[in-house]
Length: 299
Length: 167
Image 1 (cartoon, rainbow over the protein chains, first blue to last red):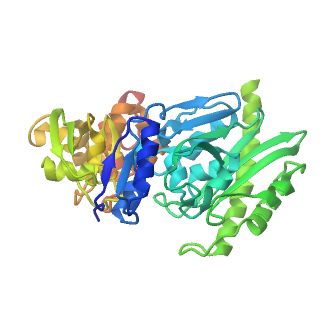
Image 2 (tube, one colour):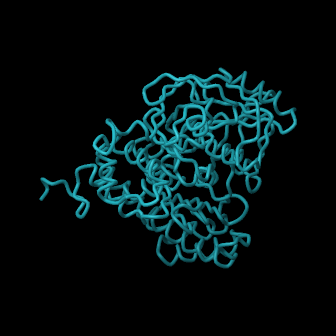
């Protein structure tokens, strides 16, 4: 199908963008934000959205940068998926896992244009970047006519393709906290075919001291309508020996207590729990191996 | 809205509705029907063109977003006329029977050519080449002849993946 008709503006400043977005939000069908367009054009062609106005961000200055500070990585709204394929972009465990995650996002031609923040705004329930944002505890930077504000990733995603973004809100960037030195990260994904969206995915950040888990973050996608932290599994891991048996148990806890999968055409809840259980175990194993990588790099 | 862009090396201006995508503008306004449209939802890759030298889905780019940008389509690949004038990649597709019905071929050609232009060593990592080629759909060949054609175009032996001087 072809897209329904809409007006298009390409403002030259964030202030202008916020203003026209607010004006467009009051029109029938509302206003849509165009960054990379890789999900907006899909929705337009399906006519799932019929905005009166599309606000094209391509002229906005300063949104194409990735800034790395000792504490976090700040990603502007026009940073493409492709940027994260380069292993030297970010230091430490996050820098090692980002290219692994990026390879799972769509295909190379879509990664050329699609943006990290666009993915967060689209909020596909198994999107890799959404999972990463929730697992790490990212903070999203939002501009609206009322001024700037920051939203925790956990408060951003409210459901399947649903976020707490208001109609006049513009997502200008996101900050990912850097895991502490010595941490390891692991990412695993299950999909039905190479061309499918993920059915389930797991991202883990692990810190180990004297053979025991000192701290961990376990994020699950495909465990419900939105990505979640596996809090029960994290509690089970805390202080436990970093062994295969612990990781297998954490997988069972995550799948049994943290996950709340919905029936899908290609996966019953029982199947999804089984997949998540295996992914959590493998992601923990990969994260443990990754902590060793860090020690070798430091040596 | 009027949009000026460079298409296959020529400055062109088209007058398009904002809702029309680049693939539409290329085919209907500029008569460049080599770019094929099939799914128009970013899945199949038939409509792949090079935008500022990078392969993108032309169905997922608004024509009005292409102001001032450089677009190369499959029509730009052959340096000459007829079978003799085909590019090395096009000749390799022919030699390896990398097309049957040919519908997906323009997209695969642009996808592979932009990847080879950016980094010819993409063919030396089988996994990287495989991931690149999963970008587009082909329902005839089973992909293997396409993989071989890209290796051949890069000067590798399609059977071994090695350059001739590696023995």
